[in-house]
Image (cartoon, rainbow, N blue to C red; front, side, top):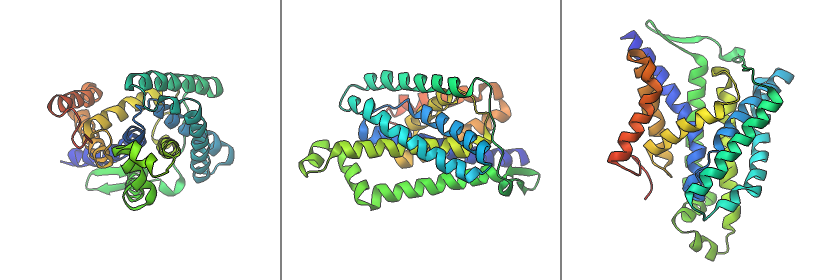
Length: 285
């Protein structure tokens, strides 16, 4: 029972983290209709820049803030140079272009930081563990899970309670109607892409103490993002949250009984959901 409790806690934390990372990926598809595999590159770049800035200034929070801001700026230029050319085009074209962008940024990361894995220390204030009986969970996992929840609430508020959110929702339903009101939909597309990429960079920064930072983390995480979004449903913020939690718990429980199949289980679950409900659990039609 202690093992089950501990793995449940880990599964929820892991699920919330995966959902946060996948959230930006899903936002880009929801409005822009682009399958953005370069999302993984922004996650990796956020982690590497956080490592570099934290190493330089020995300030974890400053590292997260500056790395996220830098990646937001990079995303702005990537959207201007590449992504905006994909709007209205076939999905397969966006997959090819954004995956190529992921590979290019990964190569730049290798050139700048090399192939050796990096690591970031947990801030001193968040060291230690929560103990429940014989089960335990590091405080930093709780912190990351809480940050993920706050990010979801903030984005829900933006999408549902602000004018920008109303424009985004209207744009998802009909781009032409939004343009007929004199609204620059391309600017909204740009903002949406930058917000999604910024979420990825922020997630990469806060997750950096939990992982080994190496060049291929962007390619690895984008597969997890894809599984979370397919399971929860493209275009659904709530679906992303539920998909992340389901996959986090499945991975955590599988790690107890059949660890060699833990990662494969995620894709098996995704395939089963696609067979039963092709648009995912909460996907937008």
